[in-house]
Structure formats: C-alpha cells, structure tokens
Image 1: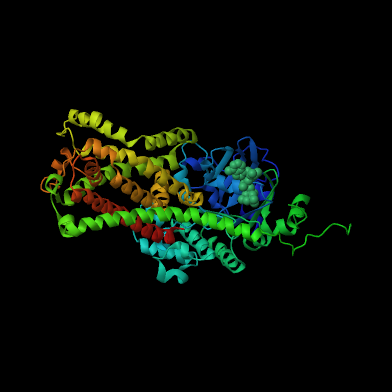
Image 2 (image 1 turned 90 degrees about the vertical axis):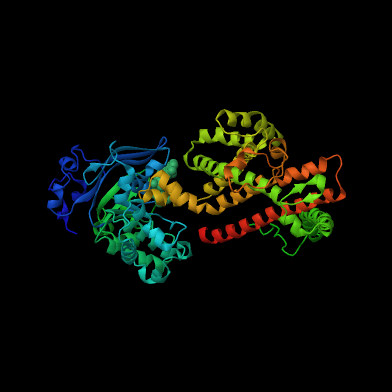
Length: 297
Length: 310
Ligand SMILES: Nc1ncnc2c1ncn2[C@@H]1O[C@H](COP(=O)(O)OP(=O)(O)OP(=O)(O)O)[C@@H](O)[C@H]1O
Ligand SMILES: [Mg+2]
C-alpha cells in the first residue's frame, strides 16, 4: 500500500499519518459533507475511498465506557484488522459499524460514524437497511437450523430478491469456497457441516446479498489450523470485492491477511492505526510494540 | 518444604461406602419404578374391565355404533367421539394460535417488566379449577354468545369448548416460550446481522428453530383438551349426538356428550346395568389409547426435528 491513498493531502487525516492516538484537533469532518446530498462520493476520485470513518466515537455500556474517542477511517476493498487485548473494545467497535449495538439495551453510542459519507447514527438511518449493506460474520459459526441452501438464500429472501435464486446461492457458495464441498447436498441441514464449513457457509450467507462491507469478529478462533487457513485465504480474496474489517487475537493472522491494522489497548483506546507492515515492523508506540511482541496483554 | 505433610492415601476406601452407594441407587430406582408400576396397574385394570365389556358387546358395535343409550343398553362410541372431537378442534383453534402468539410476545417482544406481570397472570389461568371454567361457560359465555347473535342452546358444545381452549392457552404459551427462549441468541444475531427485522427474525429464525418444542406443547395441550372432564360435564349437556356433517355449523349450537362426560354420567347414575358400568372402562381405555398415541406421535416428531435443529 502506498501512503498516497488518501483523498486529499490533508495531513490531519488519521489514516494518512498512519496513527491516530488523539482525535483530530481540527474538528473538520473527515468526509466532505456534500456527499450526503449528492450520492456520488467525490473522495473516490483520488486513490481509495474511505468507506467507514469513525469520528470521536465513544461507546458506553451503562456507565462503563468501552470505547474512547475513536477516530479512524477504513479504506475500501482492503482488509483492516483490529487487534488488542481482551476487553479493549474490538467487538464493540465492530458492532458499532453496523449498529448491532442497538440490540444491547445498555449500550449507548456517542460521536459519529460515517458510512459512505452518511453518519449512521443520524435519526433518519434505518439500521435494518444499513445491515443489508454491512454484513457480519461472528466468532462462533451460527448457521440457521435450515438447509444449506436456505441459509444462503435467507438474506435474499427477506429482501425479496428471489430472481435467479439458485444462481445467486451458487455464486455465493463459490465465492465462499464452499461450493465444491456442498454442491450435491444443498438440502442437507447446515448443522451437519463441520465447524470450518459452517463458518464458510456463514460467510456465503453474508456475501450472498452483496454487501459493501463485511465485518468479522474473530471468524477463525473456533476453528482448527486447516480450516483457519482456508478462511484466511478466503478473506484475502474477498477483499477484492468487499471491504473487510476483521477482529483477531492472532497477531500472525493480522500480519498475514490485513492491509491496515488498528491496535486497541485496554480502556478502549485506539493507540495506533496504519499500514499493517509498519505497525508490525516499526510501531510508533512502545505500548504497541510491547503488545505485539507479547510483553503484555 | 516440609516433608511431613501427610500424603492422602489413594488406596484407602471408607468401609461401607459401596454398600451405601448401592442403597441410594436402589431407593431411587424404587421411586422411579413405583410410578411406572402404578401406571401399569391402572392400565391393566382398565383393560380387564374393558375386556369384560367386549365379551358382551361386539367391538365393532362399540367402535362403529352411532347411538349411545344407557337406558336401552346401546353403547356406540361415535356420538361420544363426536363430542370429544368437537371440543378438541374448537379448543385447538382457540388455544394454539393464541398460545403461540402469547409465547412469541413473551419471549421476543416483552420487556422484563411486562414479562414479570404477564407470566404469573397466565399461570393463574392454569390454576383455576376446571369446574369454575365450566360454570363460567354456562352462566356467562352462553348468554354472551346469544347476545352477539349466535343461536346457541342452553347446553351447547361451543361455550365449554371455548373455555377448554382458554384453559389450555397457558400450557401452549409456557411450553412454547420455553422452546423459543432456548433458541440461542447467536441465531437471532445472525438474523439481525443479515438485515432482518424483528418480525422476520421471530418468524423466520426463532419459530422454525423452536418448532419441535412448540409442536410438543400442542400435543400436550390437545391431550389435556381431550381428557378435560369437568367443563364439559357442566356446560356441554348430556346429549350423545352424531356430528351433523351436512350442516357443520349446526353442531356448534347443540349439546353433545364427550367421552369423559359420558363416563361421569355412567358412574353417577342411580341405576345402571352391569354392562353399562363396564362400558365406562371401554370408553376410558379408548381415551387412554388416543392420548397415548398422540404422545407417541409427538415424541417421534420431536425427535426427528431435534436431529435437524440442534
Ligand atoms: N453487552 C455488554 N454489556 C456490558 N458490557 C459489555 C458488553 N459487551 C462488552 N462489554 C464491555 O465492554 C468492554 C469491551 O468489550 P468487547 O467485547 O468490545 O472487547 P473485545 O476487545 O472484543 O474483547 P475480546 O477480545 O475478549 O473479545 C469490556 O469491558 C466488556 O466488559
Ligand atoms: Mg470480542
């Protein structure tokens, strides 16, 4: 990745400088507000678009603050990894991107999070519609107790996109690298698949509706090494078409598959964010280096 | 490090422990066996008296008979079966949708506070003595049905059936709610994560995943409706009557005598022939066979679904 992927040479943009330990002092919105009005994003003209931009995002569970002033932007069609010790708020951040935190009664979100230039915490945003564009894959495979086919078709059916359903299901299964294994048994219960196959099925289910972004919360942590490496290969391929944001506890995994890495540390701070290579080879913060080299966390 | 700490001796075994353990085991077995023993004895006695009946009455005349007249020693089951069937169907039409809807509300929609009010409320419904339901049917429901223009007789099958339906709602709702609450949240999250609405998650994910439990609740509730006695004794009239298939609606306005009610009548009649008395056991055995079969089917289906859903 080049340093040149930003939409402007505004050096206050956190992604451009590679780190974002502090909120942007300028107070300027990260994206041109005009794109809210005009559906086409002007920032796409130069380099990669920043699909998701968090700005001073704070998340609380009751009185407990789980994320503090997160400001970062996630580039399109790349793999962005979130790493950090347990409880530092990685899952919380991921859930705040598609408003899954809405399902938690005590959760409260403060600040802004832009998806294609639109603050998703605006009153006029429909979380249901948002989640159709930002899909999610969970830590533990959670296929529905239905057939393989019905699992993949689920999202298309609830969106009434049932034209060429067979074709779409097949495409999704192929993109999730599962087609060859299940081709002859689409009517079989999804629960009869192995854990790794179930997780790829969940990925197929998520991509069948052709979202823009796929969020993955430790998608391989419940899997054995072979299944894990299949998922990793898959994620790298998916990034050609989708923006992938992945939480992982596995440092090597983050280093292997991601283009960008965000390091969260205890207390819900985003300590460092930048190109994966530079984060791993040459972190700016001692605390990040300690974490990456296993000295703490 | 002290070398004096006594190491526990792994070869020492308190004397008598094995005997005690065995005693516990037998005591528990005894209790389990006792309930089975009682069940078996009841069925055996039922069967013995029923066999006495069937030596005097041709089973074909019993199971195929369209008339039930104690005074003339005519024992046809079909009129009684008609009553039981009507009660069960009407009660099911009322209780299954209502019960499932209540369960969906309680499990998926209700706030904790709402649930803490509604659940005990439903349980109270289950605790009302059935004779009260029966009197309620006679004294309130039938007049109410008349005021809304239904041509019901004083004794009719509709009122008690409605009350039986209401009586079994808590059974359906509480068992169905258990089944829905047992559906893991991860499945709901998967649904929401796909951009499903709450209603879509409930109907498309939770209900299918809880299907076997919901189905079991139906069967249990239906068995209860089939066996319900007091409500129909009080309010259904004692008129063994064949189903009017030509004009189905007419059935609702008239009195019937379900199997349970007939048994009560035989048992409490002043003078009844020996044959009449033993017919009670034939009817009882038939009732038992019906509910037993229902439970068997329910277990089968529940097991099939469970394979698929867990
Ligand atoms: N549903 C919840 N209710 C209350 N507090 C929560 C909830 N979910 C998370 N938290 C709290 O928020 C903080 C961040 O949690 P989060 O799950 O985001 O961490 P994480 O980085 O994903 O950890 P892990 O690596 O263990 O998954 C923790 O202190 C946690 O206790
Ligand atoms: Mg987590």
